[in-house]
Length: 79
Image (cartoon, rainbow, N blue to C red):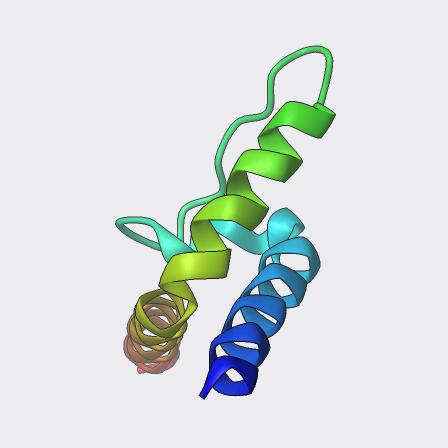
């Protein structure tokens, strides 16, 4: 049973580290977040990885919802 927990956490950490630059897609909409003047710090990257480590299934669902919203907007703008 422990291997499943470890795999869940490892996958979440990898997901968090790989989606850091796209984290605006997992919030309340697909708008790009304005970066601060100093850019992304290692603290922000670690915090995002920690959040995704435990909540990656929810983050995947919110990302899919943002993709759906963007596709809908693209279809409407094409009409």
